[in-house]
Image (tube, rainbow, N blue to C red; front, side, top):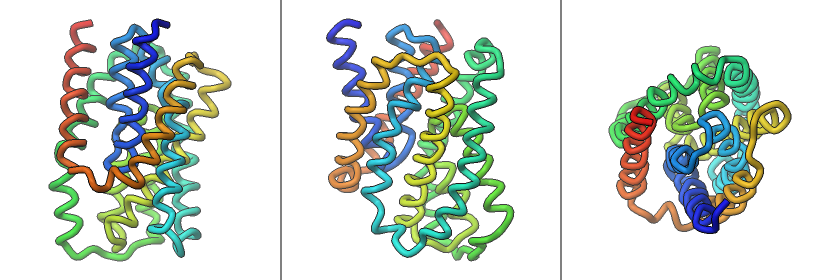
Length: 250
């Protein structure tokens, strides 16, 4: 690997760690970069998922004050995320690589759309009265399904979690964001552990992203909250659209 490639991947990992903590969808930065550098889509997905574990955990720890006192609830949600991640990772590894490569543009497009409409979603969640269905079976099923998606393709699972939970529980958005960071970490850890054993992984890429995303996660927990969300969102959308075009013409 050339030195400039290491630098590009490290910069992408740092930005992804920051974005994951504040907005979500950091995968839409690192995944296109890895594919553009010539890594097969499945290898890019698995290596990226393992590499971003450190950044997602850092971000979850950075938001620990927001979920303090709600650990029992969060643990129950985490079980659903855990099971979903196992199913999602199994799907990625059992389906033919060609199937994944075919659906990737759709997944990236869906993720970009979710990022783009996030401000509207946030306003609706903030302004409308919400029920308090913290123990609803529907909530656990939806968290499980988001975990399946996250185990298969990690991008935008955080936005999905905030949307799902925001519709069914009455917690403020900052607490939902803390829940999102923690549950996404669970999915990444579970899926990453499975990938590490049975999937094609580039460990050099994993190491670069792991280190740089730690820095990004720390920045996201401290400084990233002060950055204009529109700036972070614009970067994600631009890179995501470029990734779709690249994948379609490749």
